[in-house]
Length: 190
Image 1: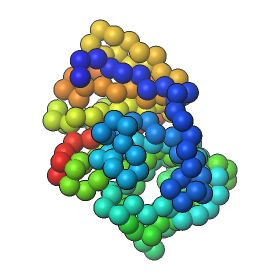
Image 2 (image 1 turned 90 degrees about the horizontal axis):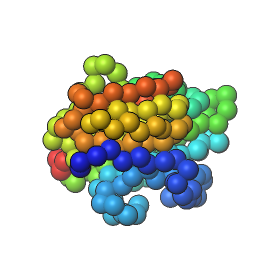
Image 3 (image 1 turned 135 degrees about the vertical axis):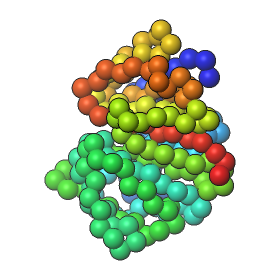
Image 4 (image 1 turned 120 degrees about the horizontal axis):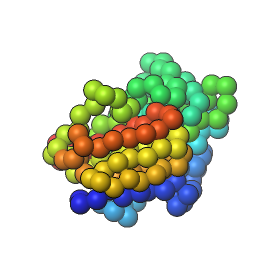
C-alpha cells in the first residue's frame, strides 16, 4: 500500500444483521468484496437499539468497541459493560452473547477474523500503540471529525469515517481529532 485511503461513512450500505435483528455497515473486508460466509476478516459498525442475542459466527474471533453509548454484554454468562472510548472486548463468535443498550442507542465497532486465516486486534489509539509492521491491514476509525497526516498527505475525516494506512509507516502518522480513534489491525494467518 503506497498511500492512505479514506473509507467514508456516507458510502457504507446498511444491511440486516445475520439474524435480522438490526443493521450493520461494512467498513472493509478481506478479501475485498467478501460476504458473511467467506471473509478472512471484516470490520463493521452496527446500530444496537434493543436488547437481544448476538448472531453466532462459528470459527470467528470477535473484537467489539463502543463508539457511541453504553452496552451491557453477557458473554458466556459473564457480565461486561462497554462504553464509548473503553477498551474493546474480545470473544469467540460461537459463544452465547447477549447485549443491551444502557440509556439509549449504541453504535459499535466490530472486527471479526476467521481463525486460521487472520489475526485481529482492535484498540483505542494511544501514545503507547505501536503497529505491527507485518500487518497487512491497519484501519483508523474516527468517533469525531479529525484528520490524519500520512507521508506528506493530509486526509480529513468526518465522524465515523475510516482511513486505511500502511502499517510500516505508523510512527510517521499524525492525527488531530476531537474524540477517540480506534485502530483495527489485521495480520495473519495464524
